[in-house]
Image 1 (tube, protein in one colour):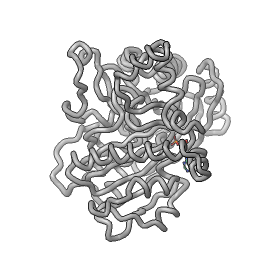
Image 2 (cartoon, helix red, strand yellow; image 1 turned 135 degrees about the vertical axis):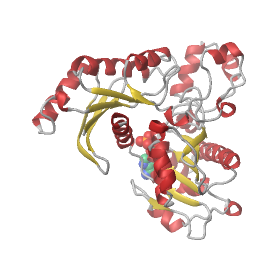
Image 3 (cartoon, helix red, strand yellow; image 1 turned 60 degrees about the horizontal axis):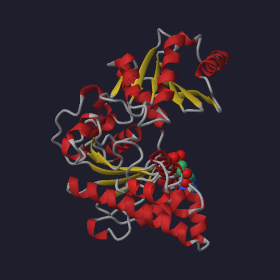
Image 4 (cartoon, rainbow, N blue to C red; image 1 turned 90 degrees about the horizontal axis):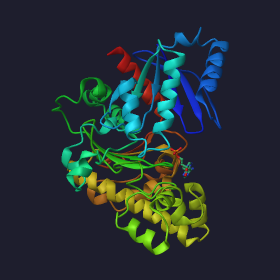
Length: 393
Ligand code: AMP
């Protein structure tokens, strides 16, 4: 089955074509366009290339197109990308302005150009559909809650992959299968050995998620991807009273405050150096106190959220690191896990230092009661697998 994954940015269009089967996912082709103002010519050119390279006979040769949609109003999961999805994306366009309008436009383009090809949306919020009401509710007036303001959570594709892979690494087929079937069958019952995972997705955008027996019990991101850990340019958690106070004291509008929280905050705002962890670490090593402070804040925040899920799940079998920082930054991983010997976490510093650049590996010692692992992220593959399961169901 040929599945195309379309990654739609507000100024970019990237794609990957997979040949999927029950046992395999082969990447046939990938490509992309930058400085995009219209998707239609990009899709035309992409199809020409894929046909020219012999991967497709025509656009209709595709079995499905998958979209990693971010946030839908009153809709989540892995679902056919129909009018309902377009309305849901439109309903929250103000909350995800960089993502939702792009996906509405992109999905419409595919609908027009390849009407016979199945379109499937995998919402980033999908993995949090079974988080308890208590854990997803903000203490706000009913009228606000009625607008859909609650914790949704993001990076769902990435954390779901971690849920499946960690179960495989523990040799727990029942949980791995439960994760694979989650968006098709729901969680169902599970009575086997516990598989509690603290999943740290640490990249340009970061989140920590608690996963119990393959199902998420909560995550650090909330109503929008703006909350939780400090992000590269974005603030992470912030007390709501700071906004009116800053607007008054600095004489700026709410929109300007929002812009600064989106573009000039996070690791960039704290370090004053860069939004890239490598630059910040170099600056910290060279004695830049602000850069070191930014790293300290980031590590504290990761530990804060990891600790919360450890407590809520009553322990953990696995701590997992993924994405650009999680996969490469052994010093940060070591700092996140420091001083946790009392909980049974022992890092093998040699294995930790050697596990970089997209390598999967166990970085805890054999006698560590909690396994600490690094698992490379591959979101397009995750989406392709979910789209395949959706089309087959
Ligand atoms: P992602 O969003 O998953 O692509 O991750 C991007 C981030 O990974 C970049 O902003 C870098 O800060 C970080 N990163 C990539 N390589 C390294 C590295 N070798 N050490 C530390 N951070 C890294």
